[in-house]
Length: 276
View 1 (cartoon, rainbow, N blue to C red):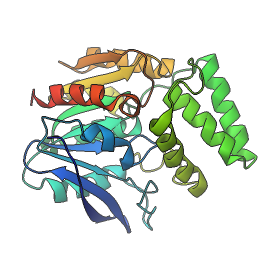
View 2 (view 1 turned 90 degrees about the vertical axis):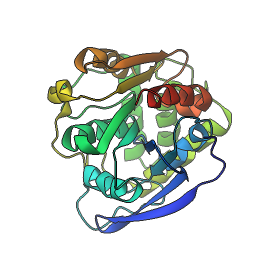
View 3 (view 1 turned 90 degrees about the horizontal axis):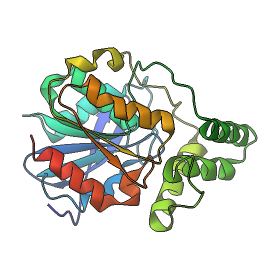
View 4 (view 1 turned 120 degrees about the vertical axis):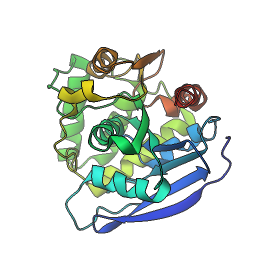
């Protein structure tokens, strides 16, 4: 499927409406879960290159993109299950999750295994993972970001966050240019202006790190070799912790590789979907 247009949908959950879009129809259904600094727009270029999926779905988690925060306590897993009830009520879906979206995908596979056919995880977070010290370059950038936010300089905070996540902490600032950078800045700017939701809100208490051995489904892990070193280290470890997991390291890319080279990442998603 090379998607040329999408159909908008809305799902009521948590005192708000989750804004989403769907491309194509049929099976398999692949649901794309965005990173914490992004929203569903981050997947549009990649979806346009997919061949294997019958239907592709992306939605904005609460507080991101076009989805308001809502009146209830955040519950990202509950929200995801509400989306699955709409887009695939009769069968399991593939979850393609980036960063915090990858953490949500893992939690869903452990808590609702009958709803998930397989996982593609891009530099995923893992709930319950032991804290790993940051490398000096990332630590310095994080300190500068906090200082900029506390001083109200959101433009600088936005620039530094995109330098960290799109370029990579050890690469030159501005390594990624053009539409990819403009989109990344626009998505993160919206989050900074809203100052919501808190980064750890809605994560739940699954603690997936200690339960990775329970997973019994196809899993593919992707990570750019310019990503934050601690994230790259975690991604490299996951195949030893998840039976049968496949691992691909993406040369010359950082934390958001589908913005850098959507066709290359789409080909790996297609490859994973073909195993299901």
